[in-house]
Image 1 (tube, rainbow, N blue to C red):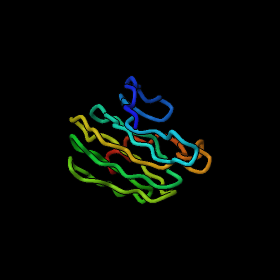
Image 2: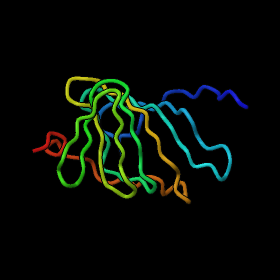
Image 3: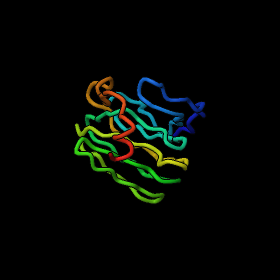
Image 4: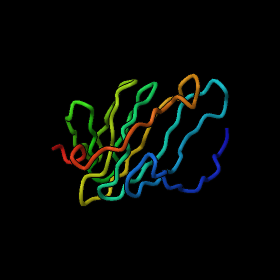
Length: 133
């Protein structure tokens, strides 16, 4: 058994996030055959990810506030604290805090065979996409 060392909170990069978004790792692989990654991610009001997809899909458990999730079909889901959203492998999507409130979620993904291919980052979403216009 091992008590994990505390890892400092990091701010996510502007190449992949618009607005202020912070990350706190919870679980990272220790052994070569382990794939699980879990992190708490906090979004300032209106902050958002760029479009992206995950090789093995993603679970997001909203723990505070209201989240917005969007797909290429233009549909937007509002997800509240206590709800979990699943995004299948390869599905392009974005996530964000709703306007006017902070949002926190626990992100759960598995590394791809090549960890560098776990998440494919794409272009930033537009204000119209975020607003569902």
